[in-house]
Image 1 (cartoon, rainbow, N blue to C red):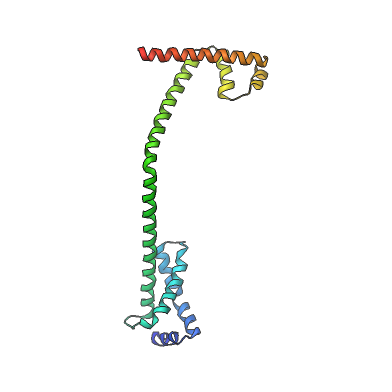
Image 2 (image 1 turned 45 degrees about the vertical axis):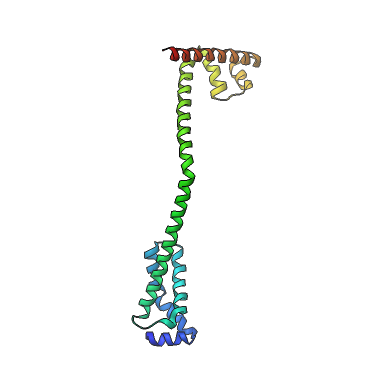
Length: 190
């Protein structure tokens, strides 16, 4: 069927002409959408359908300066560009919002990094001073503070009463505290 005949039948509301129009051009328009929007883009099928809807609505304006497919293709391409533009505006808007939100966070991140660096220095100092303690204190501190064992578990592992574990742990912590304080004083004076 020629373009002029098809357009006349479409304008007359012929359902068979609409089916022919759709099936004759659907695959090529869909390929154009996939090319412009991207493979597996969920909007490709929607834009293809929308191109037919727009074309049927604007069909009385068709002037036969080009083929019917060329006119339909141009509608489809314009719709694809509108989708791309809409996405671009959305992404730009979201990026601006993200930058606005991230502005204060970048200072927070720097603050956290400084806190982490300070905490790591303190842990290094603590580990260094812990090495100066005797093996029984180091083991006890490791079981309770590093491994997170309960007093009962430590008592069972060391085969000593729980009260003894608690008192030894208190003495070991106090010794470690004194060593750390001396090291910090040494750094201030040195």
